Length: 194
Image 1: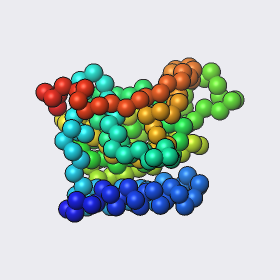
Image 2: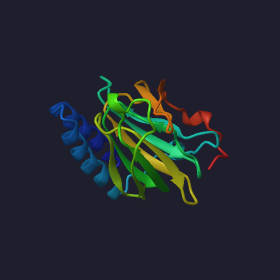
Image 3: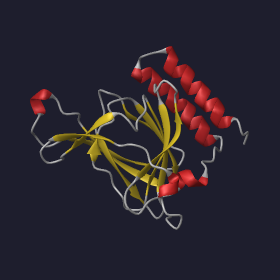
């Protein structure tokens, strides 16, 4: 693989993001680019694939200078699951290793506030598969690492996902709390972790 493959991907995504404000167009085009990156044999640095036994981790791979988009390696150890959450922006995810089980929910509205979340389907994503994980009108899910190895995803988001105020949801009541996920540093994850 050519060493400039990631640089080309970053440049191409930057052109897409700067060419339109339409989230659906952006996510469709970024999904094509991410599919090509994965199919082309792109290899993440080993430190960006390191799981933590404590919780899933999000390693920054690229953050646009103007915070208009970011790229991350998100790693879940076997059996780990996120809570139900939003992103508050668009996002595209491609599976690099392992298997991700995604649980989608209808985005609550003012008329459904205070009620249990409504399931909207489940999907298992395998290596090489790419999905539009979110747009601001369809943005509530949880994911779990299933199988016998950690799940590693390459995620591209509209904005600096480590600094965006996002919602976590109580599945039974629909109650929300705001959080900022932040970024993880591979040096903070023990090297003996999977």
